[in-house]
Length: 290
Image (cartoon, rainbow, N blue to C red; front, side):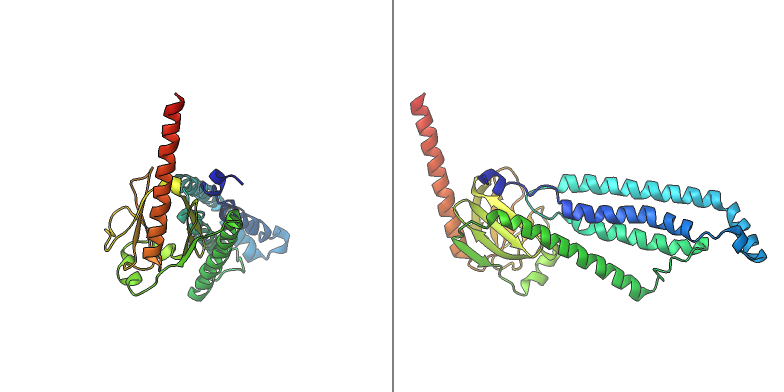
């Protein structure tokens, strides 16, 4: 595999996209299917039931319009999901949008199933009890996290033959909650370890990886404090071991927290200096050729 592909963007998260799409189709199709399945034949009804059915038939137009608006809203929300996910695609293997979209669409499915009871259709699947909703949310989150973990493992295969010069765990202390809670990213993307080799840095989380080629890095330096309200991206679990990584094509810095901070910074700076010298030699050789 080429270096460009190994250290390039992870691409579209098809595994999580398929999971979100399953819940979109479920939210659209299952309520309609259950409504059809639970509609009895007129000859099977008593006189009272027939009268109730005729009364509901008068409301059929409104229910059809309601289902149509539901379909438009769900499809519109899915388009918004695609736009947000597309704009957020970068080096990280698992985007924020794809982590939470399955939960959003699954909850729409749940409340649509609850709404069938107003039409005289019992879904016999959901009851609306708080404990049931909690189990539903936890179940969808577990499935989403498992799929994200599978996607991460698949992308880690890119680096299976890589020889890492440094493997540093992420430092974890009380500052993770006291300082870093003001930003959302460290809570959703807590790092597990930081790896470095001749070609670049790999940020490894529990559900994601973030590869950074040294060609895309401008500087690596230790900092004592950071502006947590800025647009910086934090992949850190400690504010006492912060390392600032500035990319060449982005004004937004990345902050990481390797436990072996000094060793990590020293290695990265030696590698960056070597890359500058190599680039200068190549440029000088090109001028001589001219």
